[in-house]
Length: 399
Length: 194
Picture 1 (cartoon, each protein chain N blue to C red):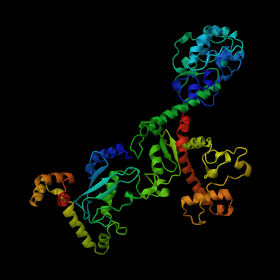
Picture 2 (tube, each protein chain N blue to C red; picture 1 turned 180 degrees about the vertical axis):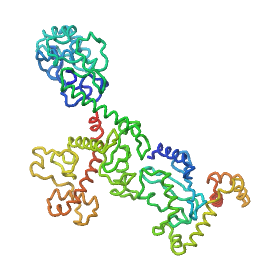
Picture 3 (cartoon, each protein chain N blue to C red; picture 1 turned 45 degrees about the horizontal axis):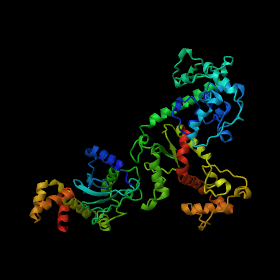
């Protein structure tokens, strides 16, 4: 059962147990937001408690007493008499002393529940599928061995731990899948150790800080760089006569133009692996709201090609008028140019104008250029937005 | 900010195959901003047998900006100024890439010696001569190589003696020779200007 509950340390980004944690490190699993003190009869935070105050159902308390809530329950096992002993802990949180909240749910049952706890961890009359497996065995070693009252899971062929529940096929399946995925990731990570950045000539994964230990994949070629070097290069000021569109957008090695850079902690060896990295990166960005679009109140220069989410909030400009608001300050309007050699800046301006003022003719005539340009601009945007959104988000994805 | 760990690596890398390429990069001072490069004249050209010294300064943005290089040894070449030693080479300007290193840049300079581009000249006089009077160009280039790029054939003592004979005090000659890295012509220039 415990594997299904989201680890709260993991949720805050700092579970020290890592893969040995008995709680789930899968974001899909629900967090255990139930206040165990309330369930035991007393929560001194009362209505201000950040956990949910719900009364336990019979079966829930039986199952939970063996997993996540067993330790807190011991702290309050003597019920109300123990309450003053709890207070020193609370005073550390600089809260004023509050008398015990007598209206909390049935204080009497506290003793019964927690006294059972040490002797019999689980009622024996549960169906095998409802019983949880021993978390010590699942983590690799159960000190009680044969005498353990819990079921010991079957050994997982990938991680070698006794963590496969014998009577829960879906859970087994899920574990095997995630275990294999993790194994694959570790393998890829191991192979990536050797890869050097062609700019700083360092091994990318041996860099001093975690933020630097990332590759910057180029969309159009397969030359390895660390994320900071390639971003530095692409964003370096073109003062020294270098042209943004030909020199800086190009791979430093093969000079092939790439429209965007994908951060990744692993290097890839097949086109499929690369595609997988790109896809998951894009889908990650797609879940972040676009700052330029601003829920329909802003004008995103990348339009429909933007990598970020464009969500229209009811009541926003977009929602009311079905078009983005005009850009401010009004951009300089370049003379309409029909040639394919277009200055990037003036084109962005022109494009912004088009969005704001609906000029379908010009729009269609330049459609092909526009498409190419969209990608180009998406690149710009991704670079603009990286500092704020990228590193943290991408890291959480990789966990 | 210059990535000094990269410069350090480049120097190590360069010293590894000094035998094969003949290209040498040595720091002038301890801070690795100011370096000296040495390239041998390519075989089959009027520069053959010469040893050419270049002054290299790394800009703050290195390796995202190209290193500043110019010839210290005088060269007769359409793309190298016969006066200042300035080099006209795209990779040292707008075609620079951070994947290039000091060694590869010097290799490119060496390649430029064997393949002049007179249509895009740095020194118009040399370029004119290259196009209109190729024989004279070849002999001039060879003469310049002989007189400016082959000084290292003399031993240090010979150089010292030669300069002392010109009337400079020996201690000053020795220290000047040391500063310019043993190039007697440069030492002479320096002695004359000081």
